[in-house]
Image 1 (cartoon, helix red, strand yellow):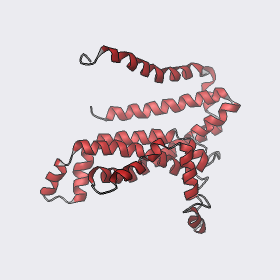
Image 2 (cartoon, rainbow, N blue to C red):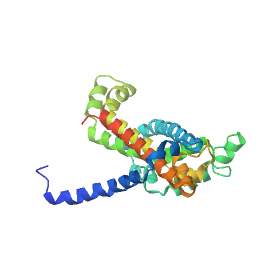
Image 3 (tube, one colour):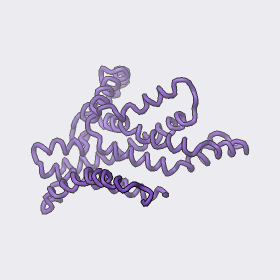
Image 4 (tube, helix red, strand yellow):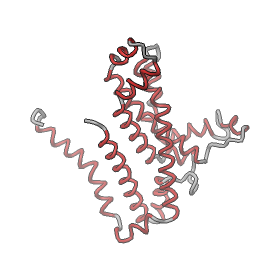
Length: 256
């Protein structure tokens, strides 16, 4: 702390207040006397269950797809690697509703792959599967960028040493590489889960808002905002608490 210029405290405090004050303001608007009733309606509980289920599946898919992608970006060296990295990270800057439209024209009934899937009797758009795909699409880059940075920082000296002792590539990956970047993998998974939990734009565009099927908690909050603002505030507070608890639990397991 002593090595930092004192003037940095002012923008740091302003930044902290900028994030904290809206959350405090929302907490002050919650009707605590009827809080339990506001969040326990059938539609609210169904939306909460669906959000937790789909976000968990999406986070698992992010790990399944994101770990190989991160390894490729961090360890491979070929022409076009920078372009590939840019494509992988596009969902970070793409408006979610645009991502939803892109998914719709890929997996929808008249989409690039949707037409073939329709022949096989598989309809993805406006289903729970569409919710998972939308969440995974927007959350995947969070894991990739976290893990790729950790892999580059860790270097390859331990992997080279293990390989020189006769370890096969798969064994090096499972016994050396992944344990070495486990904190970053956990952090990236949590970020992906939290991003999936709060996903709205791509979900409503690609999956719609069907109660019990595609209506996640953010969509329920949006609908409640017009008909029952008090319930919308209470559900928003619940979503915020879940996100804080998930991130806090992960931070406690990440070594300093």
